[in-house]
Length: 110
Image 1 (cartoon, helix red, strand yellow):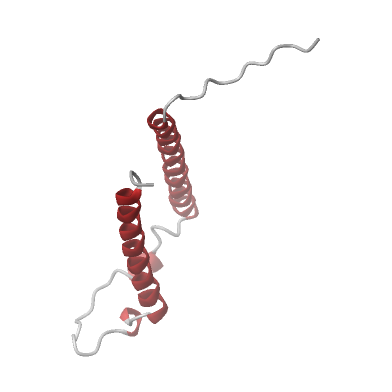
Image 2: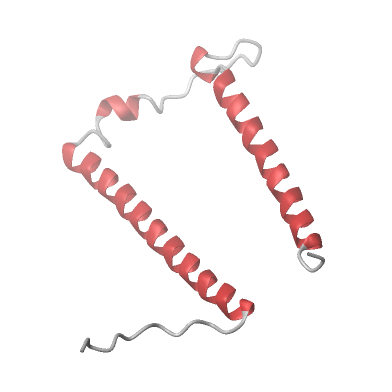
C-alpha cells in the first residue's frame, strides 16, 4: 500500500488560474530586479575598493572642453549597430502591442 500524496488544489476557473500565474510572474520579476540591484551594488563596491572609481584618471575624464557643435568629438559619433538595434526594438514592441490587441479582440469569439 502506498502513502497518500498531497496534490495542490487546481484553480477552478480560468480567471483564478491567470491570477495565480500573475502572482508568480510578479514574484519572478521582483527576484530578477533584486538580483540586478545586488549585482550593480557589487560592481560599485568592487570599483570603490580597488580605487578606480575615484582615481585621478577617471576624474580627469570629467574635464569639460569648449565644444564646436559643427565638429563633435569622435567619441560622440553615431554607432549604426546601436541605431538599428534600437529601431528594431521599437518595431518589435509595436508589432507585439498590435498582436496583443488583436488577440484580446478575438479572445471571446473563438
